[in-house]
Image (tube, one colour):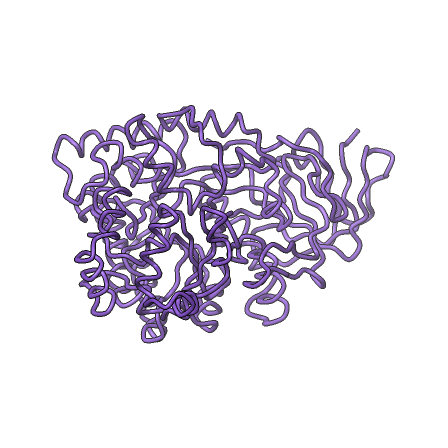
Length: 530
């Protein structure tokens, strides 16, 4: 007796091959059989789903997620589940809750607030292995894998200091990294625009990348600059691959600033050259031309040295404020100046920590500054002080044509980079349906089987998962059943918290968590993959 029969469905198997009609039988959490021709008898299955008019694909893999703390509050994670996501990859951008020590825990919580959404204040872990146990105890509905953040390792060893590590400190970092990778991290993430990762020189990254490479795992990189120095920043990551043999994966690849959009061909040429050299390369992307992060990302790294308290002191000091304003106007070598790239009308407040500033959410900095009768930089400084740095932003940096070009590149995979806070970026709710509906069906950017491949099989292979990501007998039954004709994202910048249409069924490890578009109530079926 089988658990489920999905019959009369079109199969997109995750390899990029042409779709075909068939029937799929599930048993004990796995794909027991795939049958073509006449369907098996209904009586041999406890549950029968007639998939006429629908497409069946492996569950989608979110290669860039920030839900690791939010699922401890809400294990169901509807924003992802309703997109057809069955696996999320945590620990992104060099930022994360583990490893951590008692001395730095409060400061880490404070720093992560604008990025991690509401979460339990009590952390019962310090090591990365203990954090994995906390993830398991959360009993999430979706599967999870996680990276170990470089910034978290550096913070444990040397705090938020703006200097190179000593030999002894680098030795400690190598040990912490090795422990996390051996505990089950899928790789290490870099966040080279965030403190303290931004303070790491190239040689530190080389030493740590060698540890990752020896274990055959992945280096996932938020680069130093995605604007005026994007070519140099990509080259730095390729140099890491060249020097150490580490597998390089670029996070949320994009091009910031109108003056740089034309660099897309040079970027792809550098990828082609890297591949001919044997560098193991990939990237993920979300299908939007705006980003979302903490408002402190507008500030130069020198202003953030030493952590939150020192930053707040500088934001209150008239001399330091003028210094920051000067840097915002003139720029600094190598610094990605988002305010100048986007303009103050292109920087929106997406979340705030307190009710008193709630009216700021969804409004741009220039408008809020005019309302208060201050300059845009002063509005940013004042809001950060008032909210104890707990402010998120959406930054409109990009080009629709660049988005289309990147999503059609064969090395592309899919990440939502969704931040579950305030008035979120629509990518939290709409990434995968937007790719499948708007860009694939309506714009015709690439075939549906190619979009599915990138969102499933290619991502699973990148994570070294040998039993997920494909419609294949014996593989785990992480599945999404969707309507190719109606799948559509509904989340917008003005009204982001809207679920998509066209996702009919979602299975995680063989259990239906979404059935006929409705939540089934099945919970806790996700696995932490190590």
